Length: 425
Image (cartoon, rainbow, N blue to C red; front, side):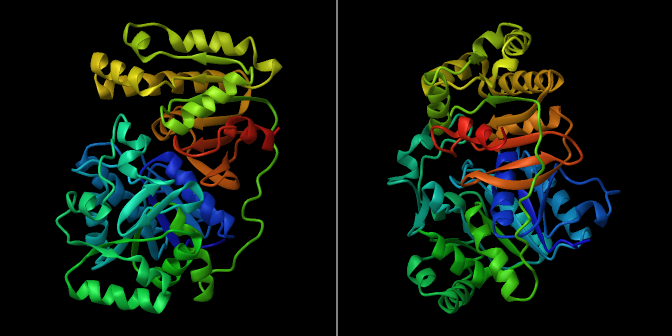
């Protein structure tokens, strides 16, 4: 039995699998819990080097996000975790009110931490931070498709400025010159920032070597605020300190038979391209329309009847993915929250029906959708397995013949759906 060293609090479900996949890839056995583990779940139930708590707090009201995150922290501390990681999106998805700043501030206060870094960089997926500005590929975040996000439109790439609007703590910059110079230079710069009253520093990182240097320098901080990329460097840093023995078998999952399907609620640019590729390849797809749901159309029942007639012939896709104009039209008519909730509820109902029809390998695209699906399926814990694409691993519902790939809307190549299902065929 392993007593966990690292406790991760993730603000959405796909983000949780994302960071868990990075830890497993580096040899750190990882257990993912859906929601805060129950108080009566003993240490034996959290048998792993790292425990990731998957919350659905990215877009909830600030007070709820803070309360959920503090509850997760309390449970992780009770399980024995000594270091903590608040996992946020690699595109820093948030609003000027939060939730990243308020949650980070509350966690720091609870841990008695006087300093942390915030680093959403994930170079393998095209997210880099330079001079405090977040880039998606070759463009600033504010010029990327994230500017049209229906819940958290990212209109400012300057993360120092964006985070400062969310917190009363002083935010500064750990610039690339210090990061590139290595762990001693990072430590020296952190000391200088602390002396200036900075409590949270946006950390530059443009490649995996930068993330490794940040991990080596910052692994002893009580709390880290980051996307999944920083997790790549932490297992090596813990091993160097004698706190971890990497396990090459950490990513092993059993083979599972049954039917396969894809559900997509994300309307991100990446997922839209993945849906278009699936359809363009002649694969079966059923589209759910939020406006039709608002009028009371029984779309879930229609989608299930359609899917059940085709599952024996191969994987099917049920999706609500559409372009930004259609998203805005639905939001204007139904309201942003209601439009999203209708789609999530419908896809969750479809997921339950598909599982009852024998689907045992399921790809889900979109953080909010993944959260709704996992909860509807009654999944409480996931063992994290091998990566499909950077940031997206396969997982197994613990104790069940059910494999799930929970994909952030922004992640994966255009052929992601077929590639994922091909790995577990």
